[in-house]
Image 1 (cartoon, rainbow, N blue to C red):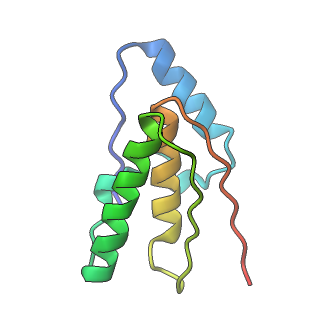
Image 2 (cartoon, rainbow, N blue to C red; image 1 turned 30 degrees about the vertical axis):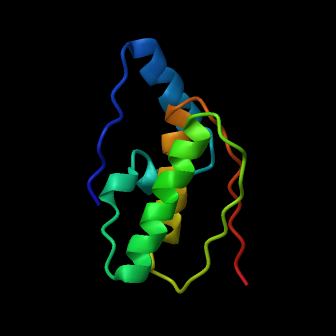
Image 3 (tube, rainbow, N blue to C red; image 1 turned 90 degrees about the vertical axis):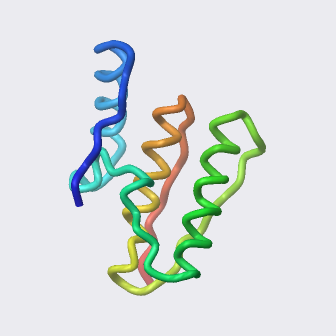
Length: 103
């Protein structure tokens, strides 16, 4: 998974973003992941991708706060998507709590 850098207008904003992500508890292999790196493999995955894009746009534009729950087997990109959402929202000045629960 190749990471794409977020584009910042100045070094201070970039440093603030990196510090926030580094102290977030996010697994380091997901630093810099973007939603655009997710490649839906089937119609259901495309539906999830489309809903996530709307979710990010809605919150980034000041829309109502919503929760999102990811369920699925190992290797189905749940962590990738959650980290991509968190970074996209943080880039837009929003913060979220993300919890991982294994059962």
